Length: 163
Image 1 (cartoon, rainbow, N blue to C red):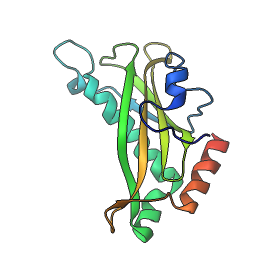
Image 2: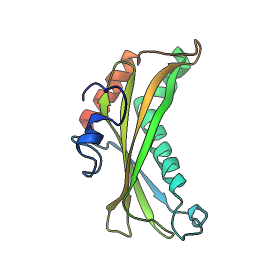
Image 3: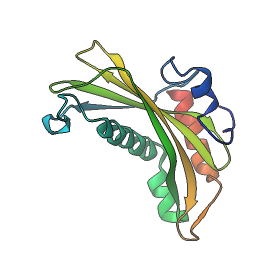
Image 4: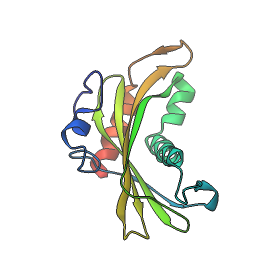
């Protein structure tokens, strides 16, 4: 994992925008979800905003796996989403089952870049979308950006090595 460059997309996003997930990204967290009828729009496919909700669900599952809710309860330091982006590869529709994957590709002292991939069962497990989001550590008690707690850095490293 490397430090996050300032401005724009993460370096692996720029380097491999078409590769699907960024160079070297593992996805140690995976959620299985069903496409709901109500997630489709007038164009008979899942509305693009829904993909970001799925990314959010995978992000929160990742945070649970690394113990961030417990760390935040003690320290007041929690996540705040700095920016996010998606690359839509194929339309999704009901009825489909998905696997939404999440992992960390770049890690810095106060932030990390999460990668996401959405795979479609009806498309044989092919990627229907990829995305990324920059998550910054935020001290909610002080109201300021801060360093990631050491315990959290260790948990991310351990999860990514296992993933």
